[in-house]
Length: 320
Ligand SMILES: NC(=O)c1ccc[n+]([C@@H]2O[C@H](COP(=O)([O-])OP(=O)(O)OC[C@H]3O[C@@H](n4cnc5c(N)ncnc54)[C@H](O)[C@@H]3O)[C@@H](O)[C@H]2O)c1
Figure 1 (cartoon, rainbow, N blue to C red):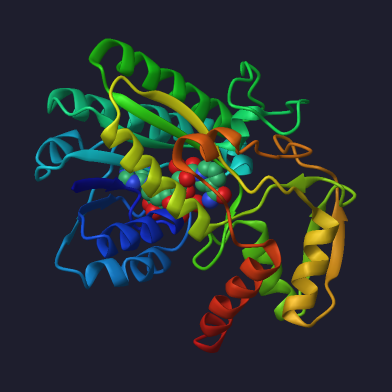
Figure 2: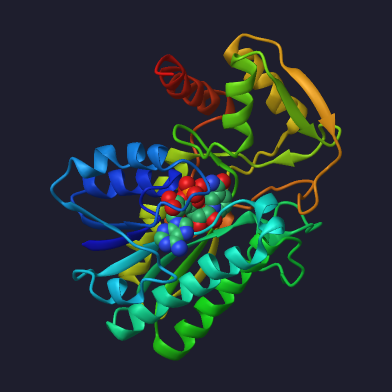
């Protein structure tokens, strides 16, 4: 297949791109190198994809470069991962999130519509569950209380996707990712920060008393879920699904810090701060639906995944 992959230079996008190319697909990657984090990191993420003849890359902004979008080469379906990610920065700058995530997704849906294509995999987020009290989170939970602009933008996209499915028969799988980690993880995310700071003997910030918990999901399990969802949506008609891709094992923040300390081999200097606005107490995915539809079964433990992340980060420490 020929796949348009948005956000190809990002953490998850670059891994998905590599796996698609390994499977023999043709990939058209697009990304605007959003300055949320360093362009050099994203260029590095793209290295393996760029070395494959079945990969082409276009630097463009899905919000503002509509003309460039409409001039892209032919493709059969879209995996749409491009977005402004992160809960906390979305509170500082909600408009940027509404632009990149909501308007950007609208432009991707319009592109599908105009080309009469009808297959889309969309990256949503566990954030849409907000402070949902029913654990584990199930996809059929009625969700109308997002607690950050990021969560709002992702939930709105899921709803807009439904509208395009209804009006234009676009088949869509919305994937709610739960805290993804592993090599190339975004530098703003906790595991990346904790490993780096503990390794360098710097203090880490612990928001809250350490009992908040996240369902950390390893990048390889997410990539497999994305690709299997792509195969699923490409083979089914009249499809509109929402699926959690999580690990179903929440890990408390104080426990996570202990795991990182053990892997890095150093004690953390912990500075405790109040919980931050927009942060939820716990995330935990029900993965029953993904098991049923795409035989999803996460395999990598948090301990093993943190070891892999450390091994990857260590090589970057050596280069600095
Ligand atoms: N990493 C996680 O834990 C996590 C959890 C839930 C959902 N998600 C979602 O998964 C997707 C990928 O996340 P990630 O962690 O790889 O983030 P990332 O920031 O590494 O990747 C996103 C990419 O999208 C690009 N982008 C942003 N705005 C764009 C625009 N207007 N035009 C073109 N490209 C644009 C960025 O430059 C970046 O390379 C995002 O949609 C994110 O919201 C991630």
